[in-house]
Image (cartoon, rainbow, N blue to C red; front, side, top):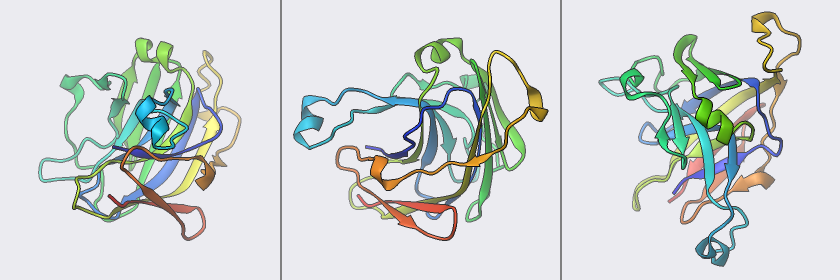
Length: 212
């Protein structure tokens, strides 16, 4: 199962920028946007969890393989699977393995646009998902791994967000500046049988480790 480090504040329409590096290319990751948690199941309550499963749109983070990667495409975590249409889900090589990668996400109403290292990957309009998930937290994901593998790590830095008004499309020159988005360890959501560790590294950088 997956683990998430989530913001306290909920965001609806925004511009989000961050840098991310997969320390281990075996690890799959992502960033949740407009996401929520369900009520915990009885099994989760018995394990001491106060939050249930995370659900909502997720912007994919994946190492580039021989045929490319799906980084930047949009997946519905626990809410229907791929939001990016199958015909548009084409592997690309914009994600640079072993290096810091710049992501940009624009979420305005039902439209979600994503860029990886300056290359636009997705321009998705999903009215149904906007109705079910119009607003929610930002969450850094560590994907679950198979028993006996790992630990694997993924690191983020320079996470910044700017809230926007909608339905007014203010374009690129709207007022407001990008501000640092702080994700505190206190809001860490651990999922069943998956543990993550937060390390404070250089200024603005956080690292998550999938331990089991």
